[in-house]
Length: 266
Image (cartoon, rainbow, N blue to C red):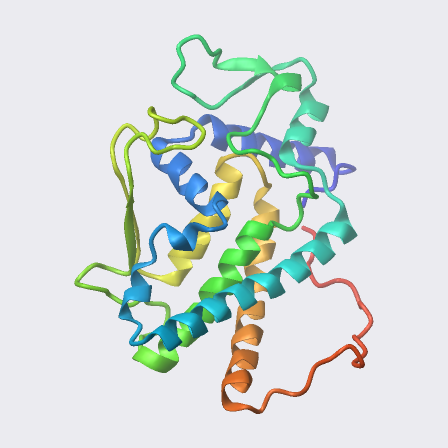
């Protein structure tokens, strides 16, 4: 998160977003739309095909939702704490009526440059604070929990996503013309989506939020750092649920006071 009182750094963050949105490719647009869809797991998840039984499917489904919910709690705590504006607000504030570049929507009647006061990101900007990125947090926590799950059950090595039916890692295809924001136009041809490692999966999820102008880079980087740890904590608790050793939980338990400083503003 850039401090607006540090004008040079604040402007550098905004310029980085402008440059990345201007340079958007078909693949980046589709990757960003994929991760923007919080039901993306229903689109394609080849690693699920290696599960042996309905019980395994429901346990993994529970684990992944559990990781996302825990990540969401921390993300919104920090959003409330920092109350940071989105890139669209920063860009309009910094540049006013100065002409800035827009992303290419392939409409010949749409200008390449617009007044900053009219600039918009590629993806819809949600009405909650910018820092940290909830989407990047969800991806990081989910991926880490899933990685631990696979390692315990299928003897996967380190960061690798299991190979399924001879296909590398996590793979699928985003069809030509299937864009929600540019239907029938983007992408101009099928976009293969292939991840051999969880690091690659999380990195593209996080970076896609910057490519499309809804987050600054610091927000997504911080989200990966803290929410990877949340994925580990979630998986450790998940194991205690499976073996019956989980401590009782209920409304009579007091929560620890919020000590602050979970995420570091850079």
